Each structure stands twice: as structure tokens, then as C-alpha cells.
Image 1 (spheres, rainbow, N blue to C red):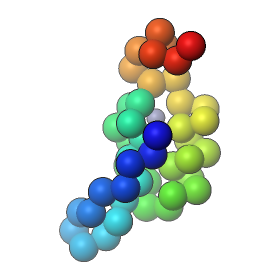
Image 2 (image 1 turned 180 degrees about the vertical axis):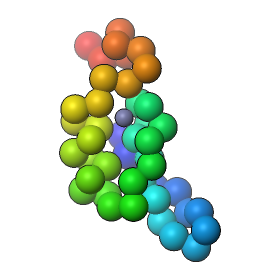
Image 3 (image 1 turned 135 degrees about the vertical axis):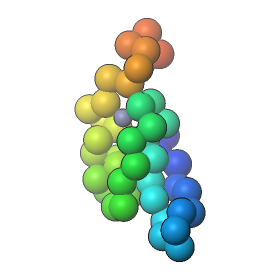
Image 4 (image 1 turned 30 degrees about the horizontal axis):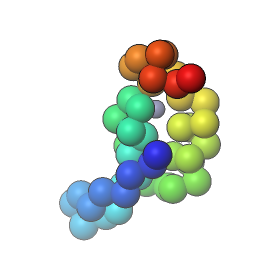
Length: 44
Ligand SMILES: [Zn+2]
């Protein structure tokens, strides 16, 4: 899941798998689809 967070007066979208922040929700979603995350076993 991409999580929206408020920071510095901006809304950021964070990949819950690796913690990477994006300023664009579609970029975050696209990243997350391809993100292996820290723990590969998390994805089944
Ligand atoms: Zn990620």
C-alpha cells in the first residue's frame, strides 16, 4: 500500500515496502508494483 503523509506542507506518498517517498501518487503506485521491498518473503 502507498501511504500518504504530510511533510513540510506537502503531501508525500510513501512506499510501505521500502519507505521511499514520492511527491506523486501515481509514481508511488507504479514504484510499489515493481518494488521488491526489504523482505522478499513479504510478497507471496
Ligand atoms: Zn518501494
